[in-house]
Image (cartoon, rainbow, N blue to C red):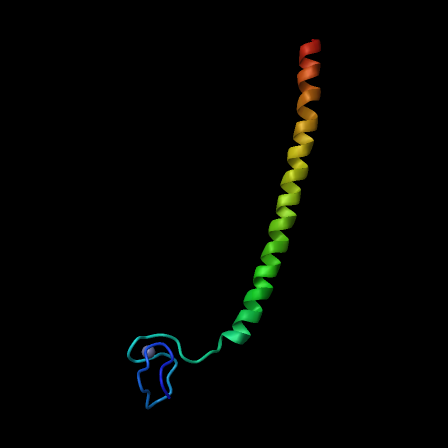
Length: 74
Ligand SMILES: [Zn+2]
């Protein structure tokens, strides 16, 4: 087995190349699935937070002119 990064001949199959230290065994497929789910959940949460903030900003903007008008009227 050769290292695909540096071409170092490997007698023992190890997780990392003894020459360049790069990861050889690809165990990332299972992890990347959970990673994608995590990213997906993160995006959903971020979207919900953004929507919440936008709604709050919009309500503030709607309230502000009303408060300003009421102050000016007095
Ligand atoms: Zn290597």
